Image (cartoon, rainbow, N blue to C red; front, top):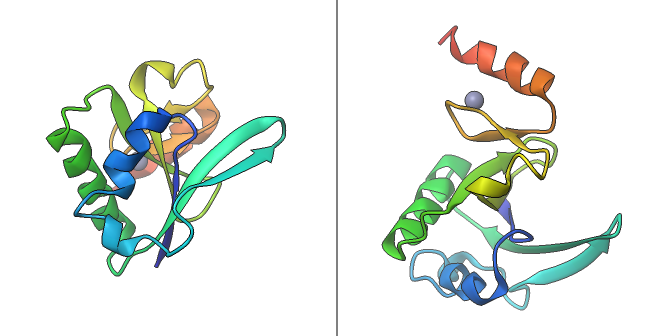
Length: 125
Ligand SMILES: [Zn+2]
């Protein structure tokens, strides 16, 4: 599956830690390492992988890369508005960016209501 990783909130100099990693480099789509786009006056930086496993497995690999490099201040979150998109966010910035994260699975929301409705679903499983 095609997985997009949003690096807009991740420092430029740290991007190669992910794009050059042994774990994920092989899944990068050739000639498409890092894309910069200007959308709604916001610079978006993202990279796209063609990954044979699930998005959860991909998240697991990303976590291990961050962990191995002692990057503790960033969290991995799934973007609920864009399918198969993962964002790497600085944990302290989440509130300022108006981003809310599910306490259970790390899914990302843009309003308290969305988060509440989503989190309720966890209690049923
Ligand atoms: Zn959740």
